[in-house]
Image (tube, rainbow, N blue to C red; front, side, top):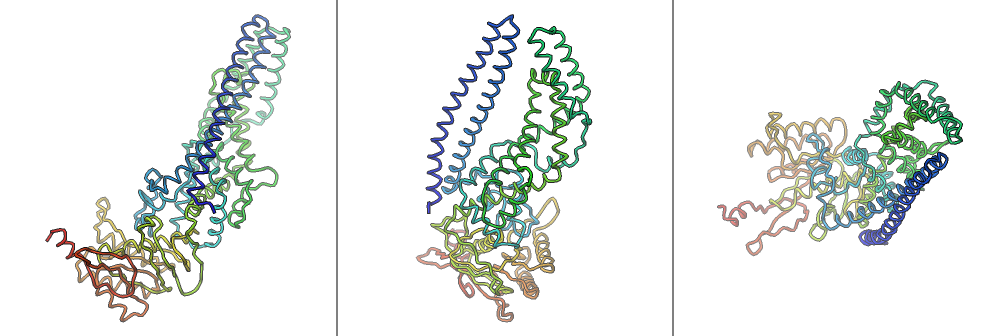
Length: 589
């Protein structure tokens, strides 16, 4: 099996060769366009005053020039997509080398009230979301945040199969991301959906026929002029008649163009993404289910979206001043495009939400599959319904350097509670975040950093990092109590894995010890499963009275007048603390 770094390196080499060819084709295309334009000018210059030669040069040369423009546009798109693919592969190599700061952090998803997001650095700078996120659409980014933050334990095996399937489709995934990345969209999907659902048509019924009638008359007049059978003044008069008809609806046309113009890039992007989904043979049931949602019996969904993209591109030609005048005068161009847009909306507005959701889903799960591909040595947890809630060997945090990371085993049964003691900097908090992240990753269907893992799906609730709020006039202690109250209320509605780190820090030692003890007792009584880390050794005495409470610890040793940490998770109670030693070592006392 090709290693991820080798794959990305090979891709870059191959794509750079393709990019070189694309640049050569573009250069040739530019020369052809210039040559064609020169021939048109020559035809006008040497043909004057012969109207047949002038009109023939304009029409014949214009058609050829438009074809060359279309070809050049396609070549330019291929070049940009190839460059984007190179960038995507280089990005993965950079991330492997530890360069993650330029990735999107998802800081907009930070929510102090989230059950676990803030405690485990799920969103924000140097977060797990930043590490894993490769989405290219705003809707996909939101969907990925939902995957990680929703506490959804349903269909984990189905999610695993989908990620496994998509992880093997490396070329497909990169093509999807490149296509999605090329469109610069400034209008959100929500805004486009709102516009489509609330749109009120304005074109009358005769709009279906009038532009065709006007265009037919215009072509006929042009032919008659070519044959010198009518004066040029009649052509000019007909132009103003057409412009007058367009002017009657100009306000409504401009309003529609304003909305349609904002959606143009999105539909240009989305029809290509839907096409990629339609034409791929997936094997995972979840992917097939999502693919089925966009399949159409009569006409491909990508063709339907492409039709609107083409209409919007045609509508955009009004920005060309010459074409805007001639097109609206002789073809009622804007009026015709408005009618086509309104017909499209009428036929498809009920299905658009589903199509958009499917694209967001694939964009989001693409990131999960990319993570799985990059970490092919990770394992997918075995989902179980046994009493064992989590049984993992060599469990580690995926964002820590593998060369320095110390992995640990853990076995915790349902409705069992661990009290973890340990010296400062011995690894308690890191271990809590590792277990928390393992639960979130497992629920999302991701492979985890472990050798083996059995996991009974559960939701997560944490209280590890509480902050006071000056704006809400809330003290640190009150904020912490509020979080603990949320945990108690949540346990009344569902089962949760509870992870706590040194709770009730905002009160005195005696009060803290008694409060912590009573809170743990309440959690045990509620049949909660979880872990609490503490420096208070008296809390460990609960295990003598409540059998489901077990003591575990991380310790530190002083060797040759230096602190030594092995970061190993052990059974029992920590006896070695290091605060006094560090105060002396740093000459503070």
